[in-house]
Length: 163
Ligand SMILES: [Zn+2]
Image 1 (cartoon, protein in one colour):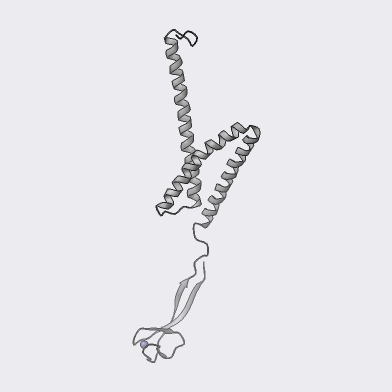
Image 2: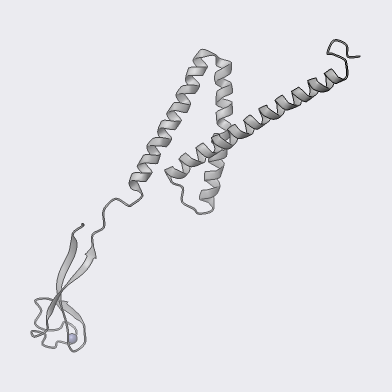
């Protein structure tokens, strides 16, 4: 429990103005308020310094930082192994990153709050959607290749016999 700021006050029976607990006369109408009952009131409830979302924000900030570090280190590792593979990796990573950045910029442009939770989720949703799209394209390509080979075979010809 947070401590409250309390004060004793006396309400003037004549004009109902609030006076300090020790006052003998009303500050407003100068009436004698020595007989008025002093009551304790809570002036302000001291709220916790940290807002409710702070631990969650720090959690997602650390998660986002860790994700960025892993993504970066994986790229550097690939780059050292084979520069072509590393460049390919960074180009592929740049696509969902750009999508996430565009989403966040548009969200901020609409006047909506952008938290670390949003940044983290935007990145992973982009990576997820991008992976599904790439996987879909690979599957479609394989199906097309299979159909193409199937039709070529039905035709009775081969690559070598094509006119
Ligand atoms: Zn008064």
